[in-house]
Length: 332
Image (cartoon, helix red, strand yellow):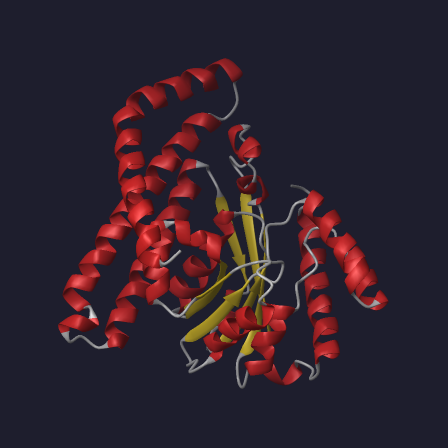
């Protein structure tokens, strides 16, 4: 499906859902509050309803703002593409920061960030853990907004059904890949193109796990690794308790095209409950502490050759897993 056909569906649906939700919001909040009173606990349904309201409003405002940017600073008006891209990065950053700070307030979250001084300067490649859609906001808030590193994302193609992400995400140099497409060479080539023309204020971000971690997914992935991988890699994969074994295709593709970027690893914990609707409505996210830790590996310290790089990636992923285990045992 092309972009315009998809948007012909998603934009009217967004308008209809948002207007209907806002119309029914007083009744929805009242019902949620009564249900929370009956069940007791930290008002999880009321918090979820408030956050959904924030999300829908941010989506609508983001789409309108994206249209406004195209009107006043699109290349069709004679503006430079650099200016247009910079303003879209600013819009993306505002959108992500508002959603994340809103989640902090509504769910009483506290965020602790360690070692983020290593993020500058670019160019950088970021390998990050994935447990929920909420953790997609962390890089924009703590890398782009705080350190001015504009990130190019490797994202699953299904996210294009989010209209704001679809519009702004297509303007920026991102790669929307189709998992299980059978066209792995084509998908990896699209990922590798993100490495072109990286400057000191640029970075590329990828989720090596390929999907959100859950204990059930971990078991399924281990079954596949046991069939496909070298025995030494199988043993490494089995030792990972809180993360999924990394898919090597995308990360190796980036490292193969890399000329001067260092690699940043981003470990985080505290957002596990945000990946499960049942956990959210049960209130397990409320009052959580989100811990984020970065570390940097110099380009010169990354080994050559696919086998050596896979082993190196597993070593770093084990380090990430060990850090999670110190304060957050296996969950999901």
